[in-house]
Image (cartoon, rainbow, N blue to C red; front, side, top):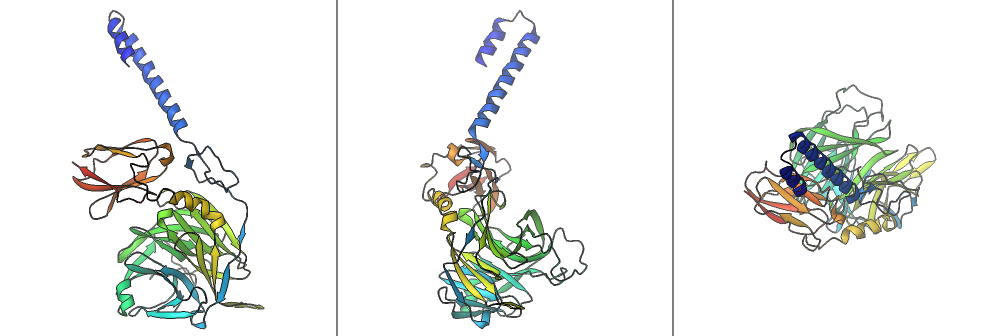
Length: 432
């Protein structure tokens, strides 16, 4: 640009159009260099070495990984007591494993993960159980999915029960309802049994939302919907639909590792685990998607839980038809061969500060823009900005080594910037 300015100054006797032409050429050249740099800065592709189409040069996971078929055998299996013959969800809460039945019964049962024996019963008083299908938690509450809708597909009283943990343990639970309808269900005409897209047996709880994964009886797909975590009446918003080739019946979420595991079975009761990992934000199907068959014939798998992403518990309810008689059971499964390398890679960033990782954030205080500079290895990571109450006010993905963010909409105050995968209190930002 200096050369261009000098040339125009010296050539003042030339026509202005010549200088304009030179300026246009310079802009085009600069744009070309920028495009080439961007193309070289990041390579989208399959980043999972366990896939069939791994690209060692890929720096951004584009969700294109494909995998060979695989089957997993439980490391242990025990029969569960008759009191939980219809076990429908699993929850690892502190050091205990909890389950519940899918209708009438309003108790949570703590079971021994080694023997399957009942250890404790927590009564959820002041509510009812028409069709409890799954369970999840956050720091303060247990969330129970009263979302079963397979009988005729036209329930108008779908809800998530929010139960405070402290009250539940003390024998005096406070139960509130998160009532909802589906954003794309406009026809409430009764369907035949097991013939609807609006049945749901799997939920996960995120930072500020609950996510529902539907059990679509005809298409064998699943749709993801979101709801607020606070009691009230809402319209569950549809995010995406994906063909999982089966009936989804349970879900578990390891949020800091960007890992969701779904469980389900085929129409012939062949159970499976469907892994979603290395995704972007809450777009759960944007990363790796791998389906693992479970070497269990005629098992109606209903619940799944993990606290580390490697060791899983799954439960199946009692199934009896013709000559098949499968009792209710609890299974332990280790997925280290499939997720170990990924989880170690994520854990390798734990405890690393932003400075140690080569991430620079400036200016501070900031006015209308904020710049985040990072190494190429950080490109593709998610960033979040929260206010002093912990409320998410802005977020996205670091698409380049230099990222300029528009923060003009933020009101003046103190904010926290966090880059995903790093254990840190976050970068304290002052917005002027």
